[in-house]
Image 1 (cartoon, rainbow, N blue to C red):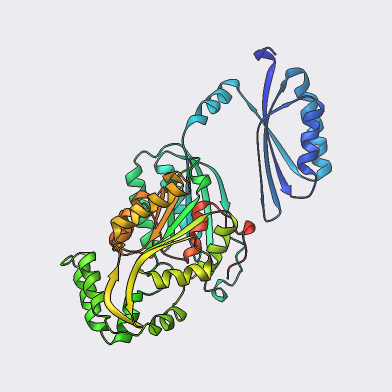
Image 2: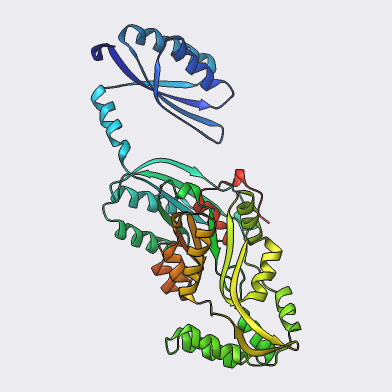
Length: 410
């Protein structure tokens, strides 16, 4: 076909969506051997938006446009035509090598202000929005009646940010000031095929620190908290603080561990998240600086594949104040993540790590996607991704799941 004889035409169709619109309009193009170069369709509240860029010849373009107009009138939709030059098309094709990014916004509620602020930063960084989709279900009008509601909107963005670090910092600032989460991920093949998720336990899968619960029942709560505060101030390291706190539990009856396990406050969204991850074929692990007894309890309850934590020594039904084996600290968590990935034959880029404390930072940094969950400020500032406004099932949206594909929230 002579390029002088080629015509490129962009058609935009809008109106009330109903069955058969796309089929009827593309049939007109098919009957005249037109080639579709690009196509996109969206349905927002039963309102159709359909765009088709097609190639034809000068001899056929007139009759095609005429038949499309008649067909659109018959279907009761509006159709608009725009000619596209070959130079414009080739320039568009040349942009297809640019990187794509996924920006996920989520929280209890998302407002026009939130969407505007994110969109403005995308523009300021010289990037272009290709598509926007809502991942969460339809929002009720009276949001006050749904205190645990979730709202998530995902942007697919083309190009490279002018300053990636500056963009991340701006999103962190917006997130902190406006009370919603923003995730920026490069849309690589690995993002689309995550396979292993590793979780911290205390203050991540459960809304408490188990050692504090045991200490209260042993009558040494104040002493244990004092040691924890010294560790947080950097006066002693995690391993030393762990040894000192475990020693204070000496003499506690083993039955108390069962009582604590039965009353653990499970973090919002854990059940829903685990059901979806199992159904989707993910492997899951608990990597905890807490205790194996409680990790095993959660494994039995929710179906985790691996549990690595600290084993308390028990003799004659009493805690001895000692532990068995190597302490699971931050360094060990990162090692275990890599080990499990190797055993499961998973590329490290396909892994996810989720935690809240400083001792989670090594595994968060090691994983392909590291998420600081309701984390301390230092951890949140260090991790590239954070989730602070909704439950743990929020990580499903970071992966790209839509509510329409998964079970209702529990």
